[in-house]
Image (tube, rainbow, N blue to C red):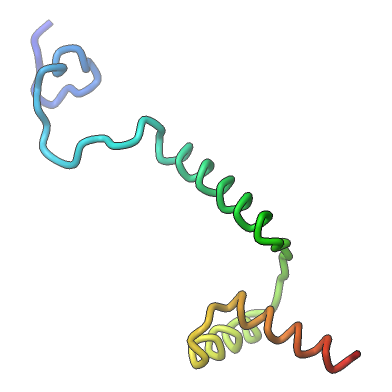
Length: 92
């Protein structure tokens, strides 16, 4: 079998070939890296006393939240947290 320059499946033929580009810096695949990072983020949030809430809203409310968070230069999550605190303080 002849060595084809475009054949990258038979890696043993290209073991000594130096390829251009950034060297591989992580032994895990991108999918595994994302999973590990998400686990670390969840653990950090838990250590900071944060709990996760999922909320589905209509697109008009979503757009208003985005616009308001942009004008206040805070994240949407911070804005929702702020609005919930304000509403609960009004009730009590």
